Amino acid sequence: MSKTRTSKSDARQRIVETAERLFYAEGVRAVGIDRIIAEAEVAKMTLYNHFPSKDDLILAVLQFREEKFDGLFDKWMHKHVKAGMNRLEAFFAALKDWFKSPGFRG
Image (cartoon, rainbow, N blue to C red; front, side, top):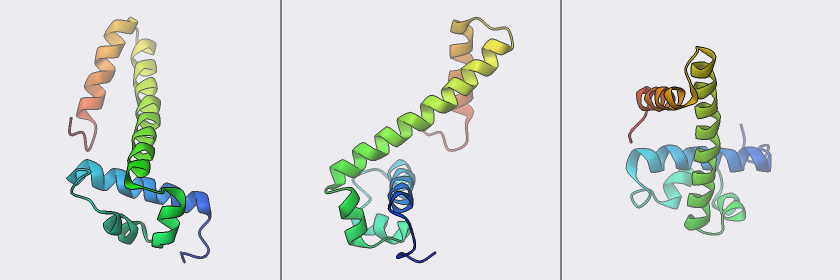
């Protein structure tokens, strides 16, 4: 997909997802903006149009992770409550699901 044909929201999402993956694997300090730009395959101006600073990008990544986690956790909770657990048991079972999920690093 060419950079010129990508919609703004697609580019923004790709930047956030790329940054999330890199930050989680290597740490926020270890990953530079140029690396995110290269791996997200966007122009530097595109990144800075969406995120004026690295701090703004970090905030967007944290919000993205929270939304993603909330959805997964709700799904896990519902699964365990539906299986007959009370909400407290379901909460701890959902935590166990999270800890066992692919890519979990704490």
